[in-house]
Length: 182
Image 1 (cartoon, rainbow, N blue to C red):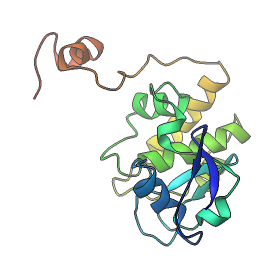
Image 2 (tube, rainbow, N blue to C red):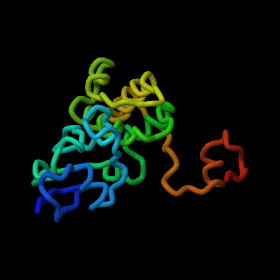
Image 3 (cartoon, helix red, strand yellow):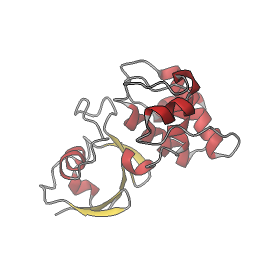
């Protein structure tokens, strides 16, 4: 039974070692932020960080992941305070959100290895496909996240998970003070 550390917690999977890490995370560990996109490693929706490197979890078996340290989007930052998460929101680089977890993890791994990447490095390290086409904003967001990580800039925090409509209206004035949203 393959054992690994996922989001700083030891896990043991009672699954065939040939099971893709993607399915172990989603189905056995209930970490559904890791998305199934193409299943062949092209789209990056299933990206996770394995021992510091961004890898497509559809291409890694749990046998190959044994003994390794895995980070999913759920483990990046529970309160959305990671610089990449903050910058993606601030730069409006999120549309439908399906590809966002994989992009955030690829960007986080890049910035951990190189806190000041150029545009070419960003495009090479974040190969994820985005059906909404937010690529120019993604580059700006990752550059900005790098500045935040280097403490050259700050970003006002995004609303925390589970924020109510009234609190969101106060945090985001464009929603209108006190207006209820469905």
